[in-house]
Image (cartoon, rainbow, N blue to C red; front, top):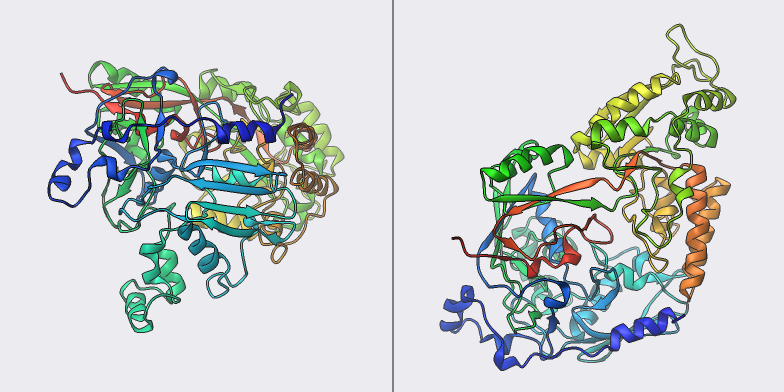
Length: 633
């Protein structure tokens, strides 16, 4: 069997098709700027070796330039979907979820710990400034290693065994990152929906940095942008994953032209984008993205009346029938993609909650198993998902090479009798006159489950689960709040149990990191304090003190030192087995269907595909820069 190192080397060094730059085709959208001398011709704007996307090999057709694509968003913050959809990455996934160079021309890996990246000669940011190793050096030395900027030192995400990488700019087009130990996480972080930053547009950002800007002028900028100091200024102006600064150069397919606050945000084609089709046409085909802010409650209805040319977020399966019926009246089409989450809706007992009685109960595996056995997944599937989903624990999907049926089946059979017995054994045998169980301190066994209040689907599922839990003597109450407040309450231990979607990545391969199966971040709803401990480099939070969770932590540490796919697959299997048996989250169904609505003029978008934040970056791996609008009539 070919080793992962050999495979990556093959991918990285594969022959890259070359476009004859004189034959490239420019967009008419830029014609006036070119004629006015504001922009050079395309041949001078493209890298020497652009990334060539062979559409015919992907069963798609080369398209035509032009048009605006309208989308609806529920709040201004949702413009963050654009860099996720655009999915321009140093290294990214293709549709088969293989890692391939994108912004990079090529890369090599030595001993699983030395990563050498080769940039494309002539590649430019959206403002026309050169992308060179200086942009990587600037980020590394002037941001990451700057103790005024990062007082706690470099982030954990760039460390292995507590040690930050050694960075080298070998020449203007070559950079190298090396660690003493293997770092199998590194490439997957670069390919993520919100990727690890390694480069910033230094020519633009130096004006906001204390090492380069005149102190008086810097003070004026701090006052102008209403921030506390130059660090806050630099952070505000450099957010690549929050396209709120129209002046910030980007490498994505479209760059923002609208500053918040606004009710409509317009993104225009990046004149220097590095991809072309096999005919030499620069991508993206579509010139403008227009994102209109709307009430989240009516996005489905507006989509059904043709007010969106591409809509995947903000709509769900309950909207499908309405949109489908509208196909005969409006120029729209809707298809169903399969979601990649480990569970469409999942419950998360907070093992770090402040309520000591409930914390003790949630740490008892019998209670977690009982709550799972009490959920009637068949009813949820039939009533909410029209029987089209898979009844399952919160785990990976059958499409993953790591899948085993026993992971999905663990503690998911509807069995209220067994659930009642387990709760009795766990010390909850006493009940009051209404049949509600009593806690050891005499309180009723009432669970308040909290949500961010962003999904009607969650509400519908919880209404059914409320009835299910009543049969085992547990009263369930629902509390909603805004996402930021909700997340803060979870981390602070104020939330007893929460509802959210399940595993972000239900399609892992062995070479993707099993970080969701162990405490790794403070936004994990089942163990936020333990996650904060690792995320902060052991400076905040506290380490896990449950043996099975400690085992997951140890296995993740072992995975981080692996050098072969076989080693990683073995660790994945052991972690998945523990996760399934211990029921740290209570799944309902997965493989649910996601409506994707589009204009009937939109071409090259797949009829069926996988949809999720990870690993597909929603639409990202399907390359929306290759979507195009056919002329009307």
